[in-house]
Image (tube, rainbow, N blue to C red; front, top):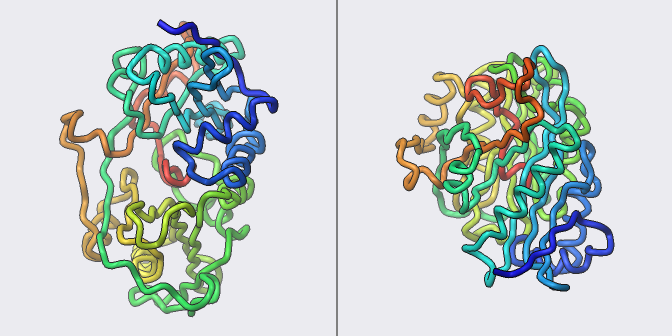
Length: 348
C-alpha cells in the first residue's frame, strides 16, 4: 500500500489543486483558480482551513473540499456546519483506502476543534461505504423534472427579457441580473417546516451568486411589492444544449398561485434541455401544481441501487456531542430539516 501524506490546504498548494481539480471543475486554470477562492478561501462562514489534501511523495493524489454553511437550529441559534464537496481521488488510487484515510483525518481535526457534524449533500460514489462507516443518511427525497427541447437562445441579456404577467396570480414576473435585498427579506417572512434551516440572508444570497463557474437566473414576482422569487442554476462550463440539467435551487412565494406562475415562467425562459428541482419540503398543493405544469416526480424506491442518483444528505458525527444534551444532537433525524433554499447544485 502506498504511504500517503495527508495535509491541510495552504496557499503554497494552490497551483497543484488548480491542476488536479480540472478532473472535476473543468474551468481551466483561471476558472478553477477563481472557483477555489470563491468556494473555500472566501467562504464567509469558514474559510479554507479544513480543505484536505493527500500526497504520494510530491504528487497530489486526493482532495476533500470542505466549505462552511450557516444554519438556524431552534433552541440553539445559528451554527456553522462544514460540508464535504469536490472530492477527487486520482484514478490510480481509486478503490483503495485513500478516501477513507482522508475522511478520518478530517473528522479528527473537526473533533479537536469542537465541530459536531460534517455534512455531505453531494453524490459520492462511496456513499454506501460511508453509511457502513458511521455516516447517517437523511433522505433520499424526490425530485421533479421536465425534459424539453432547448429553448431558443434569447437575443438579449437575461435581465433584459420582457416581464410577463402570471396567468393565475396576475403578478408581474420579471428577470433580475442578480440577487437583491428583497429576496432574503421575503424568505425571512415565510413559514418554515422544520427546526433546522439554512440561514438565507443577504450574505448567503450574494455569496452564492458570485460563483465564477455557475450561471444563476433570477425571477422576481411583484404585486404591490415583492411577493415571490425563483433562482435557477446552470454550470457555466456546459453549453445550453449540453447534458447538465438546469436546477431550480429556490422558489418562494406568499401563495400557491404566485409560486406556480414563477415555475411556469422559468420553464418558458431558462436554458437547458432538462429542468429539475428538489421537492422534499413542498406541501401537497405545490406538488400538484408542478405536476400540472408537466414536471414528472421521481420518488425514492427504498432500494439503494435505484435511489443512488436521488438527492440526500449524509452526515457524520465527530463525537463532540456524545453524552451531551443539545438541540444539535437531533440533527440526525430527517424530520427536523427544512431543505428549502438548499440544493447540491446551488452550492457547486
